[in-house]
Structures are given as structure tokens and as C-alpha cells.
Amino acid sequence: MPGLEQRPARMQMGTPNPQELLRSDHSCLEALFGELLEDFADGHQGEIRSTWTEFERRLLAHFENEELFILPLFERVNPEEAAAVRAEHAWIRQLLSELGVGVDLHLVRLELARDFIGFLRAHAKREEVLMYSWAALTLDATARAAVAQGLHPSAPNQGEASPPAAGTDRPRFGEPPVARAGF
Image 1 (tube, rainbow, N blue to C red):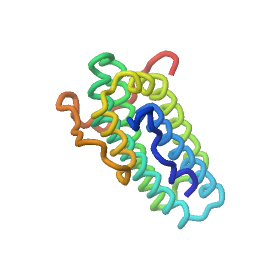
Image 2 (spheres, rainbow, N blue to C red; image 1 turned 135 degrees about the horizontal axis):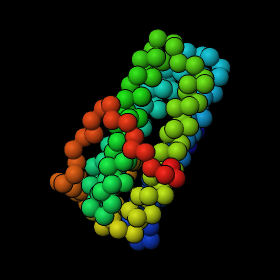
Image 3 (cartoon, one colour; image 1 turned 30 degrees about the horizontal axis):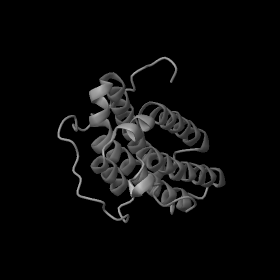
Image 4 (cartoon, rainbow, N blue to C red; image 1 turned 120 degrees about the vertical axis):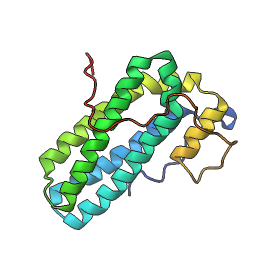
């Protein structure tokens, strides 16, 4: 699949740059968005299912990484925005699950897929603006290595890293995204 084999971005002296790693992962997801929309446009159900499965796996892994290694630290400096991102993740997970059933039953059409991907693109932009620059400036080497390992499990581990203890509660399903001006 296009864009999936990108190597992790690195900062000087081999320290992973979380901003570049996460943006790179968004680029990989964007490539999957495009492939998924093409599959829907072509109407090939087998291709839709295959791409959807990869898309779902990659998106959930991306969320898990952010929730384990970025959001617990980000919520210390901006708890309202961290809560809003968690709520969006929960809402997206719910939609992803419902749409996955629809994909299995061949009920999801191109327009609905476009709407969902449009929402995901807006969410990605929000994360890039809010969290990724902050993460590049704030995360220590251990947290950077954890983000790199979470996004690229085959990458060399640059030290053991575990998620922060505080603030790692999983979001609840069914919470709508928090309304905010400008996003």
C-alpha cells in the first residue's frame, strides 16, 4: 500500500522527533484514506474490506500510541484540549465500529465514506496544531522512543519506555466530540 513503508523521522543525534513521527503516521493514514475512497468509488467489495481492515488497524494503533504516550503528558498542560481529543477518539472509534459493520454488510457508500474521512482529516489537523509541535519541544528521550516504537514496532528500540501512569484511562464510547470554536 502506498505510503506505508515510510521510515520513522529522526531528530539530530538519533532521537526520534515525535512531531515528524506522528505527522508521518498521519501521511500513511492519508494514503489509506485515498485508497479506501478509490475502493469505494470502484465498488469492489473485496478491496473495500481489505483496505478497511488495514485502515482500522492502523488508525486504532495510532490512537493508542497518542493515548499512551502523548495525551497523558499533554493533559498536564492543557487538560481541556486533551479531554476534547480523547472525546474525539472515542467518537471516531464508535463510528469506525459502526461503519465496519456497514462495510461487512456492503451498506457503506462513497458519500458516507467521504464524510467520515473528512472528519478524520479535520481531527488530524487539530492534533497537528495542538499537540505535535508541543510534543516535539516537550517530550524527553524516553517518551520519544516510546512514540517511535509504538508507531514503528520494527524500529530499533532506543531504551525501554512505559506509558505514564496518570491519565491513561481509556475513553468511553458514545461521547460526542466536544464543540470548540475554530475546529
